[in-house]
Amino acid sequence: MKYTIRNQYITFIIDKQFIYKSIDDVFEYFHLSRKTIHLLKQNKEYSLNNHFVSSQTILQKNDRLTIKAFETNDFMYSPTPSSIDIIYEDDFFLIVNKPAFLPVYPDSLDKIESLSHYVSYYYQQSGYDIPARPIHRLDNDTTGLVIYCKCALIQPLLDYQLSIKGIKREYKAIVKGNLDKKKHTVKTNTARDRHNSKKMRVSKDGKETITHYQLIKNYESYAYIKCQLETGRKHQIRVHMAYSGHPLVGDILYGKPSNQIKRQALHAYLIEMVHPITLEILHIECPNPQDIQNLLT
Image (cartoon, rainbow, N blue to C red; front, top):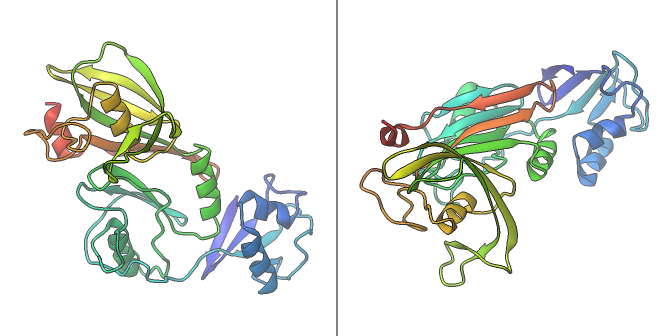
């Protein structure tokens, strides 16, 4: 859809995607909650061709549907000066390459060093009055791509797409030992470890957990692989590779420390998704960080 943005509002020029559908259908497409829809109606925060109309109104080609789409910054994450590695940005979201040893968001409100605090600072410096909203996370020591939603209107749709695996995310990792199979799927149930609250474990009483991995190359004492998650459980790749007898190099929680790398060798290198507005297929990649690349040379 073609669109224009003015202040907190977005105006869509109706095309074949929504022609002869109702405004309610548009709300449903974005997976808006009943509360959000109620507020849009109550506050008259949408209009059709500059007039407030019933949400059951049928849309025609080239109609101009205007909806309040952006929130002002609530400073959940105060701006902390730091640079960020931006891999992709448009009007609707920001994709950042997270460095190692940095949380996506802090574990307590008094901490101000996180990727979200740095994104908040970037927004402030760029003149954006919007909150920093990550739609997923990575472990502190895992590097790679994190999506931030800039537009409140599309966040429920992104959350839904993430829940049904409509947003493809792939990882690269280095694991101990050599692999015989080029491709393999690990399917177990996983749950929190009863003896260590920071750890997960394979358990018949846990939630179904499925990881697909593919060998890129065997080295002398380890293997370079890429992984795709069919489910999204905590520490999923780390748990499954350890369970398979090939823990991640440097993973002190599920394996052993390494003198070659100071963290688990895991990098979220790929995001592939259908853009929720333009419907283009976005294929976003970022290269390995230096500490992982050092192991491959």
